[in-house]
Image (cartoon, rainbow, N blue to C red; front, side, top):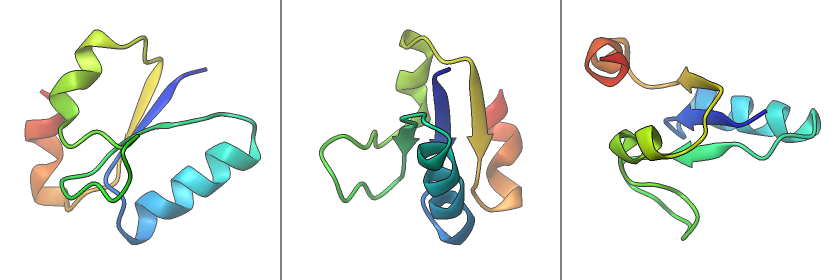
Length: 67
């Protein structure tokens, strides 16, 4: 299952680790990508085959990201 993790802060890193332990390779989105395979915006997710997304960003940004 393709899962996106939006946000790589404290909780985002934990979600990424657990998903990898479960055998998934999450699609990672972070505003300040540190790796080449990290997307810099969640807008690109609409073109990928994503089954679920975890929004691990400040609560004030959740609505805008979800919409």
